[in-house]
Image (cartoon, rainbow, N blue to C red; front, side, top):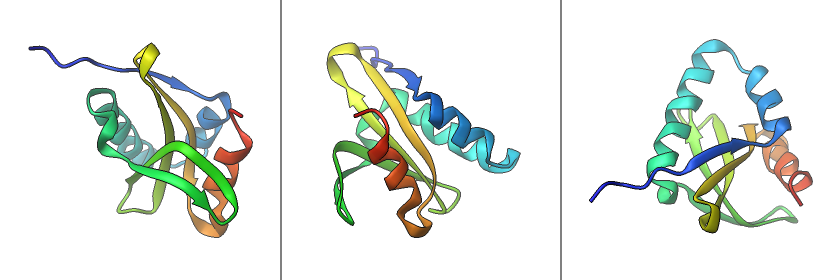
Length: 102
């Protein structure tokens, strides 16, 4: 049986997040994102992160855990929505994700 591929959709601000990364890191991020389209369960569930409600979101790491990719799986649309990409420093990537797509 053929594996179902999930479509990928980026939050407009997640595209800006990606544009801020250097070329080497972008390649690592896109490798992780392409794995998600075949296996969206690869990520870890997020819940409460320092007072930010990220229930229903998942994260995967890139660049030796320096970069987090926060995403949401929308099963009924066979879609993965990339919400935020960035470093954990100061919970910045989680704050961005919490402010977007709500």
